[in-house]
Length: 142
Image (cartoon, rainbow, N blue to C red; front, side):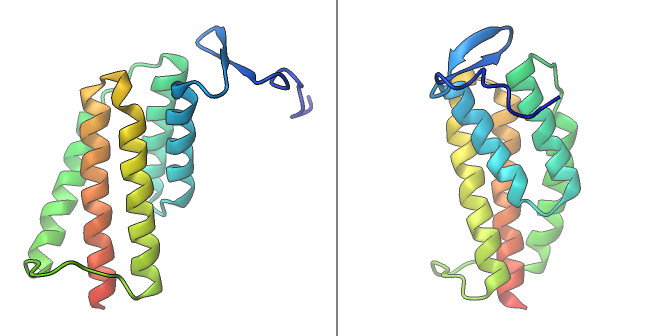
């Protein structure tokens, strides 16, 4: 089967059993999550993001609370390694800048899913952006 189906050539795509314009906010949310998934280096987080996209796009039920707890544990460990901030940071090291860019995509993904009113997804993405920010700080301090 070819990847080219031509079914989206008129600006519509299928989701949840119906045809929807490609500029619908549900596609914006899934697309931003897909973008985030493509730049996150942690395989476990990539899987979490795929599951979230599945929940949004295919009506799959997901309990992301466990994954959120795991990220919160990682945040707690990283915070112990860092000194409190006393100024605004501008990341100079390449790895830190890439992580900070990833964090900004995560924040955009968070904004793009607000309309879904799914508290668990919002909390997960909020924690994820905090975690990525701490990773960027760690990289900057190396």
